[in-house]
Length: 175
Image (cartoon, rainbow, N blue to C red; front, side, top):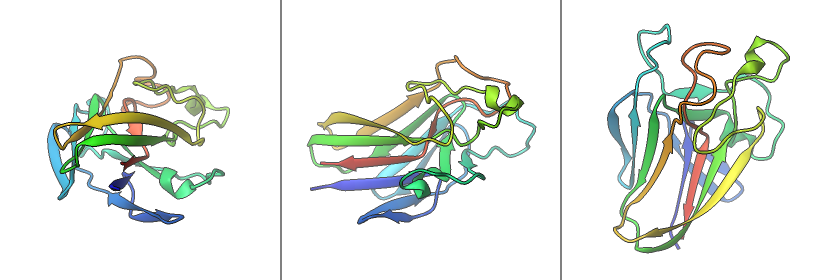
């Protein structure tokens, strides 16, 4: 059995008997980052409306999370347009891919910040709540590609500019 777990945007952590690799590289747009021997990350786009000179493509949660396995949701990787993870050197065959999401930027605090909505290939309803999506995938060329694409729907400037686009907390790949 083959398994690869990634704590997207976060440090190495263990949940139960499962170790999630760190994914803390903050390099920005239009780059392919070979994160480890068996995986890589690609991000496209710039947060052009963000008031920063250096783009950081990771997000950190500052509130207390009241959910199972909260360590997976304290950080996330995000991208303004598309975010792709590559799992390389896989044996051909069937895999189960679990994607972990939690909205950790927009807050549900009955203020202006609670107006934001993140929309991409999966709509994340609610904040500081874990959402898991499980997919079946067939690998036939030793590489599995997982792509998140911004749909140009949802928030682009509310409550603040520059925090739209795909956001993922963790990825688990198992044969």
